[in-house]
Length: 135
Image 1 (cartoon, rainbow, N blue to C red):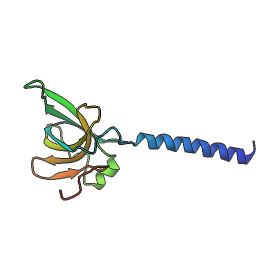
Image 2: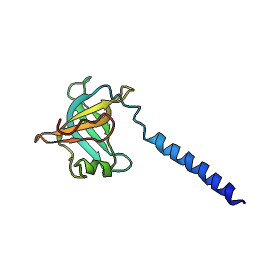
Image 3: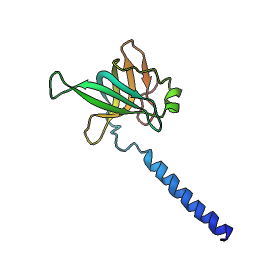
Image 4: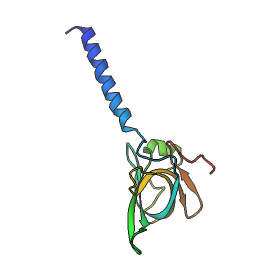
């Protein structure tokens, strides 16, 4: 095969792969026009690529004494570490308040914007619509 053809095929395949990667990193499922706050208890903090997740038990609005499990998407561990996060920074059974951009489909959870802890410190979550430092 001609080297020029091989280069063209490689170029086209590279473009297709990069388009797929960009499509994955969309934030369109979150409503950044709205910033909501919820308080609950940490169920689990998943420190993993490509996105970390914070799972929180929140008192149910529909059933007294029951809890709903909410999921908050966050950045990758590398990006979170730049914001002061660590794998051990959020512990199960810890009371927290999460400021978030809700899911557009109305399900519980969303994109994490800021987490405030009982001792008064807070961590900002990187990404579109994030709460600026110092707020």
